[in-house]
Length: 198
Image (cartoon, rainbow, N blue to C red; front, side, top):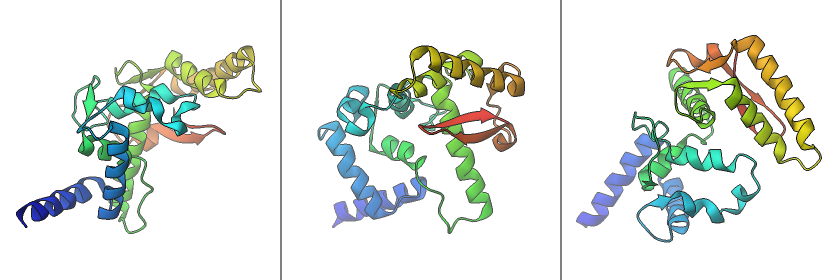
């Protein structure tokens, strides 16, 4: 009885921290165990056999985002060697759709967290800035997944996108922890979502 009570208390805590229902937490726990090979933590190499990531042109950025301490809400920069189930839920919570029962303040907070997650994913050196070179690399990676676009064409498109960003951002995108939506907007490309400053 005590163990069951403790488990249900833990699930309630996870529901509060992540916004997932108990059924969703149970389903994600099964996925976590599958990925980890029934171990208490997941390492980067555990993502090597995820079919949905195999052909994704920004696979390395997605996997890295799971281990970025900033995304794990641990405050510091750098990467964790492994993540536990609560860390996994924290990262998965960034992918949750916005709940229609949220009030305006909660919706705003959720949007900012999602944008911060995207920003961290593209800030490859974790310096709190997305340089035009980092932006160019992202665009090239996204286009590299399209078999109909040659490498030179991908570079030209990336350069054009970089020049457009340069005219708006003047050299870099900076995360300052202020109202991020006045600094950035999300532009949906055919293949992926990219964060740009506005």
